[in-house]
Length: 480
Ligand code: SF4
Image 1 (tube, rainbow, N blue to C red):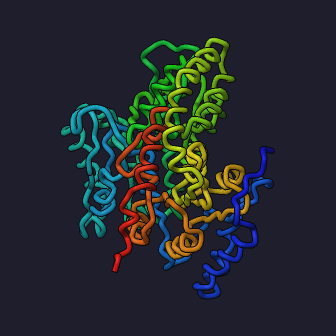
Image 2 (cartoon, rainbow, N blue to C red):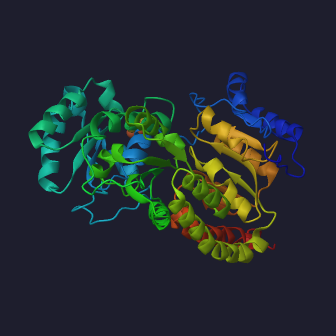
Image 3 (spheres, protein in one colour):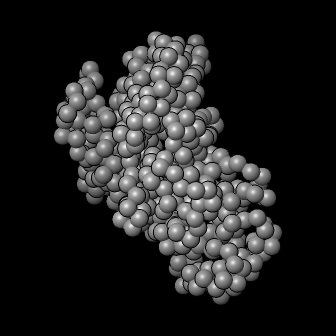
């Protein structure tokens, strides 16, 4: 066990009494339900200290999304050469159109399809069912976009309630159109958050996609796949080029800038490198059980974690890769040192609070620490126990951990802990900026990025400095 990290002024008692004060606002039932989701971290124990993956308490303003968001927005949507149909009324597809920054190559509408494709349900589709409309839509999609390599059908809430059979329609139309059509029953009422949407989507990749293609190029000993990187602001591109400079051959990316046929052939790689454990562990486990492909969980945020990750990766290969990895680390280290030398003095000792989805609340901690910052609170919208097990050793002892935090709880913790930076989502951003607090969006990278890989760290360090040391924060209070 590595040395226990502590933060001056934060003890288990101080954190617990801060939690108790926040819980005072709730009625008895709400208090009882929320209490197990908030706790001080026990770093030495290295285990989850909070309950997770439970239904949200009604009316508390959770930051969570739904299974459709986990399926269409996260897993399926980034596959660039498929048409992704938001099947149901117009809202869900509209709000999720272009808002997640999973960048893609190619030409929109020709070779990639980052568009809002919807069946736009009307009342008559609810009353009479939408299966016929879906069949017609699939035919039209193939006519309009002949270069699409497949179509996914992502169900919104009503589809599962009115008894439509999208699976039968997909099967029939897939034959008729000679095109993969993947039905994904990811209605938003399923599960408790985005998380079940990930699982359902992984299962549809297992049932409809994997093993249906083979790589055109010959197999080699260094063939790997990058799993669970969604290319936010170009993250995949930064990691892919880094892995390739280490001599590895990244044959498929799941699913950021992903290609359907490469994803379908991933059962032929030698190793799966997984970044987002939460959203893609299911398929890594399937490929391990079914195809004997081992997987390794890595972290590409900040030079310390990148170095550890590259070395752990090299251990899975021969001396040639080990040497190349060391050469890559040696090449980047002076550049990383220059960045740390520039930004660390400006950020040393600053406190951060994080609240993100299912990976970054633990994965980015090391990158802040590389800049001399301390994370004093962290939490997830939709993580499970195995994520919190992995979080405990990363977070300093006794700091607050919050699961499915309500906006009220977050505000209370921020008021009490007075961090120098809050790093969370768009729904939180303007609340905290109005409190006069520096804020960075940790989902969209605030329209910046990439943050992954060595290239990403230079962008990350610059962005954090820009936020924390902006002169704006000195002008929040009127001089009168
Ligand atoms: S909960 Fe239902 S209606 Fe709301 S976004 Fe998700 S699928 Fe759409």
